[in-house]
Image: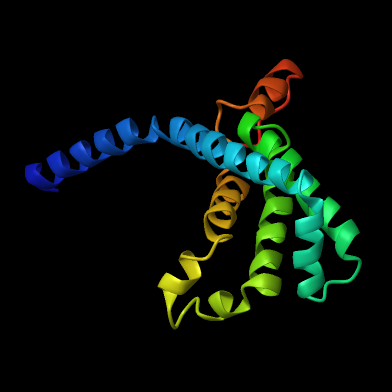
Length: 160
């Protein structure tokens, strides 16, 4: 192997190592920002259940009031759990399902446009929460999380 190729590989390896240190900080930032935003949305929905129920009624959802309570609670509690990194993957799965259903039920045109008009898809309200939840579901909460702290305290391997 040539010296130039070895140098390039060494530089690339060093770059990857340095950038990898940013992963837990990035995951923390995603969890904090979008978790707080989601919790805030859920809190607002819980305090305006009449409006949420009316909206769900207009979508012809079954049991709109109970659904409004459920969705609002999932978003409020899920946002808090996401922000602190507790039960992160289960919480992210619940939020992902919630946001997919938001697309499917309330913004189906945007969901259908995922390939034909991506801007419409990622411009829809559920997108950022959906993306953030999928990110944490797949990559985990990072080592700056309560999940990691509790795993270390109990001597179990973290799910990072």
